[in-house]
Length: 540
Image 1 (cartoon, helix red, strand yellow):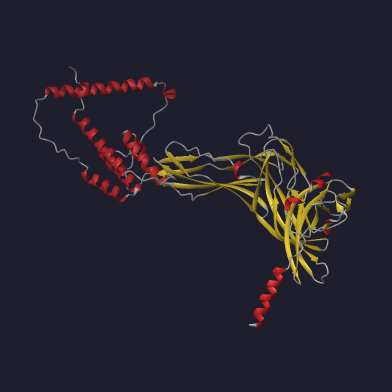
Image 2 (image 1 turned 120 degrees about the vertical axis):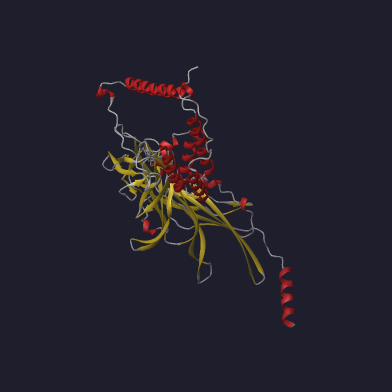
């Protein structure tokens, strides 16, 4: 109980004391003297009171110094019931010239600090390993072409503990710049002193020819340094703002060579490869997939061209959307475009898939080169179990036989007209006989049921196979999908929609109802033609 009373009395006495909080002195100091031209040092201003930040006017420093960021902190100390307050400004300043400079007196409420005479040495006079923080930069090349990717590496060397900071990219006009990958945190020895090194890589791509000025990377942050309190025997870690900037650089950008032809792609190395399994033969309607990869060293993904696939007639293509990316592998920037294409044969035969070529410019040899894949020949056969097509002898070209196309067309038309006329005369001379009513059911009802069952199962490949077998059997000759699609526009559209739904990258819902309706419409048209084959030629 006695202890609590004593604590209460002490608190009452503490609040009863009227501390002297009036501003009485201002002290200014720098973290190093002499300084280096263009390099930042810390100017610390202390006021022995709680002062508003805006009361310190630093405009007088702008005549001889570059003024950077300013940080403000406040503290209160109570010793033997004596309360002391302090306001501290830490200002980054960089001398504009060499020689003897003076940091002018700074005034707050009529109280001024003492001026500081500062000796400024030229740049390069201080060994780099004696600094606590500095930046080194490097370009992968000093000469590049328009559109060529140039790597710009920034290394931040720290001999003190980093509390927080921001490393900014350089300002460049006439080029695009972006960071590649993540920062790399390592350590290095510089003349026997160990530094923590934060490395960042940027990609620079120039838009036009000429000299490209790179201002340099910039760092602003706070570090922890050891400082000894006045009147104390121990050192403490103190937060101190620091700022550093790398030296500027110049990149010479060359235009696109006039002798280059094709889509402009400049790189150190370009490779084009494919992934697919070559088979002895492929069936009609069975898709085959080819996957392509285009790789370019020291290039950007946006500069890679789209791959062109020119397929012969009888093959349908369903390309997927190309995937692009830029990665860093073994300290090399690699751009990649990957694309797959599904190829669906529509009729049997031998087909040649044309070669794929990508022109590019070698930045080292300064010559145009070609990345290519050879042409491929594939064999397409009819599905197993289908009726083999009757042998077909190709007609001799008119230029070789001496007979024109008009002659053969006229001869065929005359023969057909004569046969039709003879059949019509014979039918007219014969006595009319009442024919029994024909069964209106289609002769291939069982096949239609099979097609209906396949559609219900939703297997596009099986549906197309049954459709091909049914129509080939109904017409007495082997028909491929292209010939079946040509029988009617509705049937052709239904087949194309089914193939697109099964093999394209969109993967839409297959419409089997449209196919069944097209087949039914085709059967009704065929029955009408069979009932009156001579009606168009019946003379009145």
